[in-house]
Image (cartoon, rainbow, N blue to C red; front, side, top):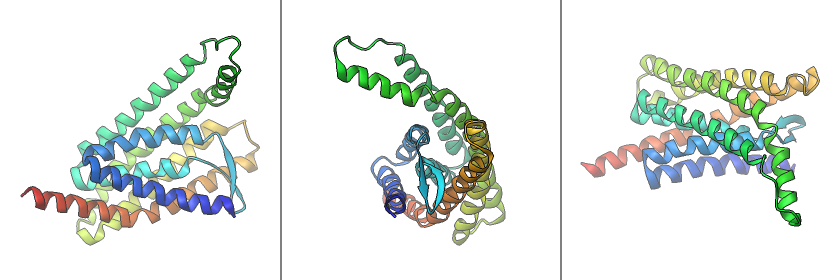
Length: 234
Protein backbone atom coordinates (compact mmCIF):
# COMPACT_ATOMS: atom_id res chain seq x y z
CA UNK A 1 0.00 0.00 0.00
CA UNK A 2 2.98 2.29 0.52
CA UNK A 3 3.68 2.50 -3.22
CA UNK A 4 0.08 3.41 -4.03
CA UNK A 5 0.00 6.19 -1.42
CA UNK A 6 3.31 7.59 -2.64
CA UNK A 7 2.02 7.45 -6.21
CA UNK A 8 -1.01 9.58 -5.31
CA UNK A 9 1.19 12.01 -3.40
CA UNK A 10 3.48 12.26 -6.43
CA UNK A 11 0.56 13.10 -8.70
CA UNK A 12 -0.55 15.96 -6.45
CA UNK A 13 3.02 17.19 -5.98
CA UNK A 14 3.59 17.34 -9.74
CA UNK A 15 0.37 19.24 -10.42
CA UNK A 16 1.02 21.75 -7.65
CA UNK A 17 4.61 22.32 -8.79
CA UNK A 18 3.37 23.07 -12.31
CA UNK A 19 0.86 25.60 -11.02
CA UNK A 20 3.54 27.13 -8.77
CA UNK A 21 5.94 27.40 -11.71
CA UNK A 22 3.21 29.08 -13.75
CA UNK A 23 2.37 31.57 -11.02
CA UNK A 24 6.04 32.39 -10.39
CA UNK A 25 7.38 32.50 -13.94
CA UNK A 26 4.35 32.70 -16.21
CA UNK A 27 4.52 31.05 -19.62
CA UNK A 28 8.21 30.26 -19.21
CA UNK A 29 7.47 28.41 -16.00
CA UNK A 30 5.36 26.00 -18.03
CA UNK A 31 7.96 25.67 -20.76
CA UNK A 32 10.63 25.08 -18.08
CA UNK A 33 8.64 22.13 -16.77
CA UNK A 34 8.90 20.21 -20.05
CA UNK A 35 12.66 19.46 -19.82
CA UNK A 36 12.25 18.82 -16.07
CA UNK A 37 9.56 16.22 -16.69
CA UNK A 38 11.38 14.55 -19.59
CA UNK A 39 14.73 14.28 -17.78
CA UNK A 40 13.28 13.10 -14.45
CA UNK A 41 11.00 10.58 -16.16
CA UNK A 42 13.87 9.03 -18.12
CA UNK A 43 15.86 8.53 -14.93
CA UNK A 44 12.94 7.16 -12.93
CA UNK A 45 11.76 4.81 -15.69
CA UNK A 46 14.59 2.32 -15.13
CA UNK A 47 13.01 1.38 -11.79
CA UNK A 48 10.12 -1.07 -11.87
CA UNK A 49 7.68 -1.25 -8.98
CA UNK A 50 4.39 -2.89 -8.10
CA UNK A 51 1.31 -0.66 -8.20
CA UNK A 52 -2.17 -1.98 -7.53
CA UNK A 53 -0.87 -5.53 -7.94
CA UNK A 54 0.69 -4.94 -11.36
CA UNK A 55 4.23 -4.34 -12.61
CA UNK A 56 4.86 -0.71 -13.54
CA UNK A 57 7.75 1.64 -14.22
CA UNK A 58 8.35 4.85 -12.36
CA UNK A 59 8.37 8.07 -14.33
CA UNK A 60 4.81 7.69 -15.59
CA UNK A 61 3.44 10.50 -13.46
CA UNK A 62 6.05 13.15 -14.14
CA UNK A 63 6.14 12.29 -17.85
CA UNK A 64 2.35 12.43 -18.11
CA UNK A 65 2.42 15.97 -16.74
CA UNK A 66 4.23 17.10 -19.89
CA UNK A 67 0.94 16.56 -21.73
CA UNK A 68 -0.82 18.69 -19.14
CA UNK A 69 1.69 21.48 -19.76
CA UNK A 70 1.41 21.39 -23.56
CA UNK A 71 -2.38 21.46 -23.25
CA UNK A 72 -2.18 24.51 -20.98
CA UNK A 73 0.20 26.18 -23.41
CA UNK A 74 -2.10 25.34 -26.31
CA UNK A 75 -5.15 26.69 -24.49
CA UNK A 76 -3.55 29.86 -23.12
CA UNK A 77 -0.90 30.77 -25.72
CA UNK A 78 -1.61 28.83 -28.91
CA UNK A 79 -0.13 26.02 -30.98
CA UNK A 80 3.17 27.79 -31.70
CA UNK A 81 4.16 28.02 -28.03
CA UNK A 82 3.13 24.41 -27.39
CA UNK A 83 5.30 23.22 -30.29
CA UNK A 84 8.22 25.28 -28.98
CA UNK A 85 7.95 23.53 -25.61
CA UNK A 86 7.91 20.11 -27.32
CA UNK A 87 11.16 20.87 -29.16
CA UNK A 88 12.79 22.22 -26.00
CA UNK A 89 12.00 18.91 -24.29
CA UNK A 90 13.41 17.00 -27.25
CA UNK A 91 16.65 19.00 -27.16
CA UNK A 92 17.02 18.60 -23.38
CA UNK A 93 16.72 14.82 -23.58
CA UNK A 94 19.36 14.56 -26.31
CA UNK A 95 21.68 16.86 -24.36
CA UNK A 96 21.29 14.89 -21.13
CA UNK A 97 21.95 11.57 -22.86
CA UNK A 98 25.11 12.80 -24.58
CA UNK A 99 26.55 14.62 -21.58
CA UNK A 100 25.86 11.89 -19.02
CA UNK A 101 27.27 9.15 -21.24
CA UNK A 102 30.34 11.28 -21.90
CA UNK A 103 30.88 11.63 -18.15
CA UNK A 104 31.08 7.84 -17.81
CA UNK A 105 34.39 7.82 -19.71
CA UNK A 106 36.10 9.81 -16.97
CA UNK A 107 38.23 7.74 -14.58
CA UNK A 108 37.24 8.31 -10.93
CA UNK A 109 39.88 9.62 -8.51
CA UNK A 110 42.06 6.74 -7.34
CA UNK A 111 41.71 6.12 -3.63
CA UNK A 112 38.43 8.01 -3.33
CA UNK A 113 35.96 5.27 -2.44
CA UNK A 114 32.96 7.58 -2.73
CA UNK A 115 34.01 8.63 -6.25
CA UNK A 116 34.21 4.99 -7.32
CA UNK A 117 30.79 4.22 -5.86
CA UNK A 118 29.28 7.31 -7.53
CA UNK A 119 30.84 6.34 -10.87
CA UNK A 120 29.46 2.80 -10.64
CA UNK A 121 26.03 4.08 -9.67
CA UNK A 122 26.03 6.54 -12.58
CA UNK A 123 27.07 3.75 -14.94
CA UNK A 124 24.22 1.56 -13.72
CA UNK A 125 21.71 4.28 -14.51
CA UNK A 126 23.05 6.01 -17.59
CA UNK A 127 24.52 3.10 -19.55
CA UNK A 128 20.92 2.08 -20.08
CA UNK A 129 20.08 5.59 -21.20
CA UNK A 130 20.76 5.37 -24.99
CA UNK A 131 18.08 2.73 -25.56
CA UNK A 132 15.72 4.38 -23.07
CA UNK A 133 16.46 7.76 -24.62
CA UNK A 134 15.84 6.49 -28.17
CA UNK A 135 12.53 5.00 -27.09
CA UNK A 136 11.61 8.16 -25.24
CA UNK A 137 12.63 10.46 -28.09
CA UNK A 138 10.52 8.65 -30.66
CA UNK A 139 7.58 8.20 -28.31
CA UNK A 140 7.85 11.78 -27.10
CA UNK A 141 7.93 13.34 -30.56
CA UNK A 142 5.12 11.22 -31.99
CA UNK A 143 2.83 11.58 -28.98
CA UNK A 144 3.48 15.24 -28.22
CA UNK A 145 3.12 16.35 -31.84
CA UNK A 146 -0.14 14.42 -31.96
CA UNK A 147 -1.27 15.98 -28.67
CA UNK A 148 -0.75 19.54 -29.90
CA UNK A 149 -2.46 18.78 -33.21
CA UNK A 150 -5.34 16.89 -31.59
CA UNK A 151 -5.94 19.55 -28.93
CA UNK A 152 -6.50 22.22 -31.57
CA UNK A 153 -8.53 19.86 -33.73
CA UNK A 154 -10.87 19.17 -30.80
CA UNK A 155 -10.81 22.85 -29.87
CA UNK A 156 -12.33 23.65 -33.26
CA UNK A 157 -15.09 21.14 -32.60
CA UNK A 158 -15.57 21.99 -28.91
CA UNK A 159 -14.64 25.68 -28.69
CA UNK A 160 -16.63 26.68 -25.60
CA UNK A 161 -14.86 27.39 -22.32
CA UNK A 162 -16.86 24.76 -20.46
CA UNK A 163 -15.73 22.19 -23.05
CA UNK A 164 -12.05 22.53 -22.16
CA UNK A 165 -12.15 19.20 -20.32
CA UNK A 166 -13.28 17.46 -23.54
CA UNK A 167 -10.42 18.70 -25.72
CA UNK A 168 -7.92 18.20 -22.91
CA UNK A 169 -8.84 14.58 -22.25
CA UNK A 170 -9.51 13.46 -25.83
CA UNK A 171 -6.17 14.77 -27.08
CA UNK A 172 -4.15 13.54 -24.11
CA UNK A 173 -5.56 10.05 -23.78
CA UNK A 174 -4.96 9.11 -27.42
CA UNK A 175 -1.51 10.72 -27.34
CA UNK A 176 -0.55 8.75 -24.26
CA UNK A 177 -1.67 5.52 -25.92
CA UNK A 178 0.75 6.27 -28.78
CA UNK A 179 3.47 7.18 -26.32
CA UNK A 180 3.09 4.07 -24.17
CA UNK A 181 3.02 1.66 -27.11
CA UNK A 182 6.08 3.12 -28.84
CA UNK A 183 8.12 3.54 -25.67
CA UNK A 184 7.50 0.10 -24.16
CA UNK A 185 8.19 -1.76 -27.40
CA UNK A 186 11.49 0.03 -28.09
CA UNK A 187 12.74 0.29 -24.50
CA UNK A 188 11.83 -3.13 -23.14
CA UNK A 189 11.32 -5.55 -26.05
CA UNK A 190 13.64 -8.50 -25.43
CA UNK A 191 14.34 -7.31 -21.87
CA UNK A 192 11.16 -8.73 -20.37
CA UNK A 193 8.99 -11.72 -21.27
CA UNK A 194 5.96 -10.98 -23.44
CA UNK A 195 3.51 -11.27 -20.54
CA UNK A 196 5.51 -8.82 -18.42
CA UNK A 197 5.97 -6.51 -21.40
CA UNK A 198 2.21 -6.38 -21.96
CA UNK A 199 1.64 -5.82 -18.26
CA UNK A 200 4.08 -2.90 -18.25
CA UNK A 201 2.39 -1.42 -21.33
CA UNK A 202 -1.06 -1.81 -19.82
CA UNK A 203 -0.13 -0.34 -16.45
CA UNK A 204 1.90 2.44 -18.10
CA UNK A 205 -1.08 3.52 -20.17
CA UNK A 206 -3.68 3.09 -17.44
CA UNK A 207 -1.62 5.06 -14.92
CA UNK A 208 -1.04 7.85 -17.44
CA UNK A 209 -4.76 7.79 -18.25
CA UNK A 210 -5.57 8.29 -14.57
CA UNK A 211 -3.13 11.20 -14.38
CA UNK A 212 -4.70 12.72 -17.52
CA UNK A 213 -8.18 12.50 -16.00
CA UNK A 214 -6.96 13.93 -12.70
CA UNK A 215 -5.22 16.91 -14.30
CA UNK A 216 -8.46 18.47 -15.64
CA UNK A 217 -9.07 20.80 -12.63
CA UNK A 218 -5.49 22.07 -12.98
CA UNK A 219 -6.05 22.95 -16.65
CA UNK A 220 -8.97 25.10 -15.55
CA UNK A 221 -6.89 26.54 -12.71
CA UNK A 222 -4.14 27.50 -15.16
CA UNK A 223 -6.66 29.17 -17.47
CA UNK A 224 -8.00 31.14 -14.49
CA UNK A 225 -4.45 32.32 -13.71
CA UNK A 226 -4.04 33.44 -17.32
CA UNK A 227 -7.33 35.35 -17.28
CA UNK A 228 -6.53 36.95 -13.93
CA UNK A 229 -3.09 38.07 -15.13
CA UNK A 230 -4.55 39.46 -18.36
CA UNK A 231 -7.14 41.42 -16.35
CA UNK A 232 -4.48 42.87 -14.03
CA UNK A 233 -2.33 43.91 -17.01
CA UNK A 234 -5.29 45.85 -18.42
